[in-house]
Length: 343
Length: 170
Figure (cartoon, chains in turn orange, purple):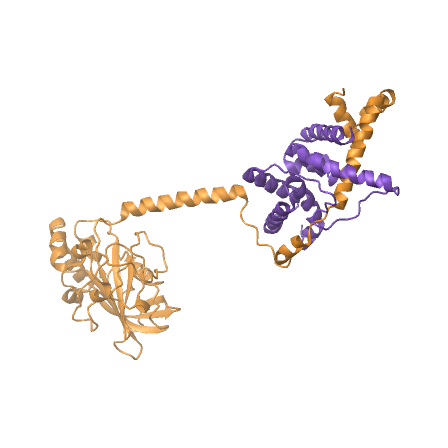
């Protein structure tokens, strides 16, 4: 009976895996113990037999045929290593859970949107406001644009200054919250209750800034309007921006005061119909009604600047910044004479 | 390290087939296993960065798949040595240098007995002795391919050899 340690020594001797001292020891024992030598001879026969078995075995031709497609196609690019796959999966789940939680927290409690938008185009800038689908039932699909969204979809009624159809017909039905925030008859008295004297201060501020003319079109809803017309094609397009913020007059009521976030819906009405762009603006300064030049490149407002003939103060930078980068797919590239109006 | 699938397949089609044949019940299963193994090799080839020897990498894939396959099927390979068994019809001449027909016949018989005895070994022992004596891998390569310590390779190899020797040679 040969012990396991000796069997392992013999096995390693067969493979030439012994150290010199081990080899000397094993060879001495092999010379002295015939049983050990017989065992080694038997192990050699087994090894040779296995080699012979390996030499006679070949895969069937069907294996080559089955793998023929693989042999003539490039292997796929390597994916993530297993450890990173788990990491990526965990990160994805975490992000998904976080987004779901945040959306659930910010989602309005009441909504009457009839259907999700068929197509969304976001304003080409970041926004601090949550996104919300734009009702699209009344807007032709090829004219729907989605700017930096917020849940205060403003749908101002048409004003005498705007020749195009009412904007809210393109926006679809409003939620209750939107109606409260945008309808003059409902929202303004509430605002006046909350901030008494604000309207008076606003009018004073306008007068001080030399934009008193805006009061005639402001109505009860604070709003900005940009009317755009392609050069030489009057009335081709107009942009109407309705705001839920009071604008520059916020500074005039009770000393220094933080401007509330400006939330704006811009409706660009072209000859082919209205296009709605929802964006978040933070307009600090204000303008009454002044000519500007709007440049559209690649379906995006690339520049808004004062017209060369304009002698009024510079345009509010934040308003220019908000309008710049807004995607306007339905508007052809070019420079447009526009009228910017802020109530 | 740039190596094409065609090169890998050309170099390892026979070794992988033989290992599959050792660890599956019949040619049909071995054929299916080989297809799966080489599909995995094909998929992973672009990610092979040469950190291990190519042979180790391929045998690792083969071993992992074959072990998974056996666990899934709950199979224990049964090799029935039939007269004239030719392993699918593609058989080389026995690589026996002995010119003596009697000795040649004896070797053929020995090989057949070895096949049967191999199938009775525990899976790990079978894989180790086959990779060492059938395919000529080093201890280190076997340890890497089967993911076991090298000491385990040595001890299991010794036991497997002794077991086969006792069964086949006496």
